Image 1: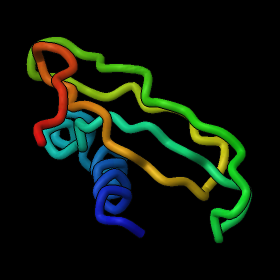
Image 2: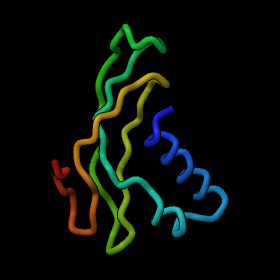
Image 3: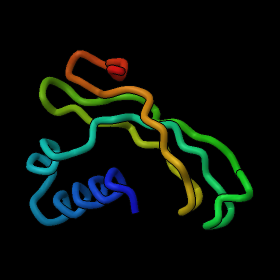
Length: 91
């Protein structure tokens, strides 16, 4: 698993155990585009989806995650969600 996937899973576990406010501070606020595949070898592309934007108010910011219909995918960062709205990634 990649570090980002592990971070997302850790944040989800924190929500389950500690509640949303604690986990929100640790959540990954990067929005991604995803290419998903039919197999673990990633040889057959099934499609592409994108995170749907940013949500929240004030300091309670979150990413509206896409539904990825396969466990096999590649994620590419596209922007960061902030209290001021989506911000481009810095090079």
